Amino acid sequence: MASLFDKDPASSRPPTNLERIEKEIKHLKKRTSVRDGRATTSRLSYLIVLAVLAILGLYLLDPILYALKKDDAIHAYLYLHDYGNVPELKALVDTGMFASSELTILNRRQGTAHDYYTSLDQANKTAASIVQYVNGVHALHAGKYQELDAVGKMRYLLFVHNRIPLPTSWSFLTPIVTEPDQPAANNSDTAQ
Image (cartoon, rainbow, N blue to C red; front, side, top):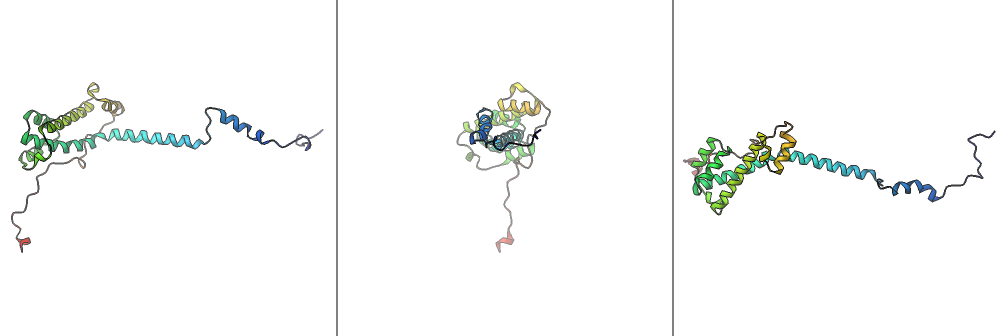
């Protein structure tokens, strides 16, 4: 009886090149095959990183926008206080962006408020956009889904609906209204 491990060297021939790569060719003809498996994982990882950054951006949107809008609100308030009309000024104050001490400082401030805007219409439009933004933030935090825009609705579904608290502003990022620097009344040390 012959052993199973014995081969007749005369009956076996080496496989041809086509026979060697036949399995590879069949695999590559499939639509789901990929030559380099790492390419799909890197694309997937880029999409995951992009999605995480987008969610993080939506979460941190308010502190950044609030700081920018408050800076614009200071300029709009100063301009409207000097040249504007009372209803727009009152709507800007009613947003709650300014503390009472800040309003006192802004009311006393003298200067070049006319440099901020070229016309009253431009200041009114800026004030209206600030009021609209702050009302949207208040609606988002109050859970008023129907009053939100598309980005606000997405943020509501991601965070407010899941009871994840959203920051509105950060003190280190938000501008604070302070008294302008007063020149020293008596500089006898520097006069010598």
